[in-house]
Image 1 (tube, rainbow, N blue to C red):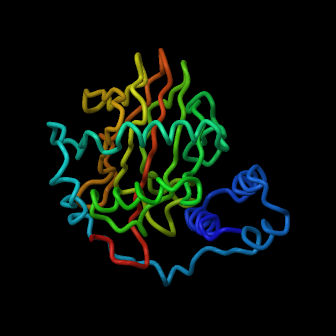
Image 2 (image 1 turned 30 degrees about the vertical axis):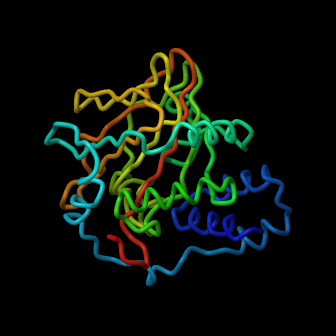
Length: 267
């Protein structure tokens, strides 16, 4: 099994992802029962002693992206856009590649499929998927100013006509089962960076209802926001939704960052 797949398994386990869901992905990608036994069934979460405990949330409000991107005019949340983050050629290449990839129904925060709440399809962009993945990851790291060790593996998502992601937060709400499962070990989601790979002719906007703002898909643009306040509390004003696609197709890539890792956070 390639190292990139092994890294994906370890990261997913550290995040608390459902092992049966991971097994299904590995089986779909033609890994043998023996490979799955060795690399999934026998693998444990990283020791908690290896994870940095204290988080400087105030410093996270001043990372590099806040200096190079355009901020939405609001005091309620840190929301930014960065045009031409990806080239048109990069977008087209990843869209074409993903159509032939192992797309699966997208899951919600509980780790299960809920087509009434999130009806897109998705899969993870590990390094071995395409040479562009590593290059984009490093570009994200430089733009954000956060060590990639704090990030989840990029996820590509397809929305066909009628598909949507109803209002939700990217952070895990403390004192919930989802928080216990996904955030106890490596912490909550801090920043989200989302990249539009297509222009969607109609619909498909990313709506922030509490901010009174909707961003419509703009090919190559990155949309970035901080899910937490400067004191580390989740920011409810980051509530957002992927509005139903009315014409065409919407393809995005999402990258999430977490609070803890064994490595220094801010570059």
